[in-house]
Amino acid sequence: MNPTFPAFIFDLDGTLVKFSAGYSHRYANIIRDVFRSYEIEPDEEFIKRIELYGDFEAIIDLIGDRWAEYFWFRVEAADFALRKELMAAGEITIMPGALEVLGMLLEILPPNRPLSLLSNTHPPSAFWEMWQFNLLPYFKRIYLLNWNFSVAKPDPSALIDCIGEYDQICSFPVVYVGDSAGDAEMIHRACGLHPELPVTLVQVSPAGVCPYREDISCHLIEDLRMLPDVARQIISQS
Image: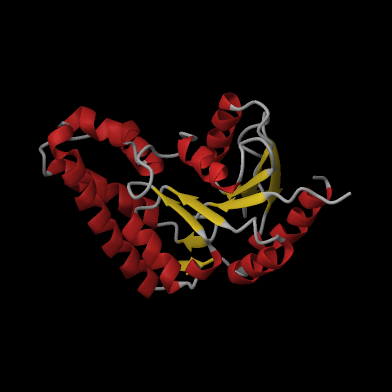
């Protein structure tokens, strides 16, 4: 019996690209500084909503619809400059073996299962990283927040749209390769909308922590270079 090949969809930051521990703190400071220019002092929970999920609606709630897009543009510009600085300093790097892993997957998968990328990363930063690390040639479909979708993960809308570009929803297996609680929550919500959706999270966790959710199919790997073996296992079971 021939296997039904899954579609592989990747996160970017923390999955294919590795960040130093200091990035998150400096990004949060960017958001604080931009808010303070509007004479607004956001609390830490609010900062986390923006930092983790790009919560555009939360920005509108605080500063109004008229200024929200300009706010986000300023954050994106400052974040892009920060990433370029950290990349030059070697504090943002490609994950070890990432290009080899992507190449192996393209050899395993048929032409109707090209690799896709789905990320909350701002488009200027995402394309800069992919260009710098030669990731662009590996992806046929790229979904980025505030580029071709507007509601951030963990909302599952972009994931469902991406899956729909391959074929009819629920007619083939899907593998999302990510690293965060938001990725697991996105899959949980997608399965809530489409209970028959055969989607699996492959969670890249160097610390080897337990999966963030137990109610979704999940493979935990400590190193991205373990992915081809997991992919073959998933394909053999399809």
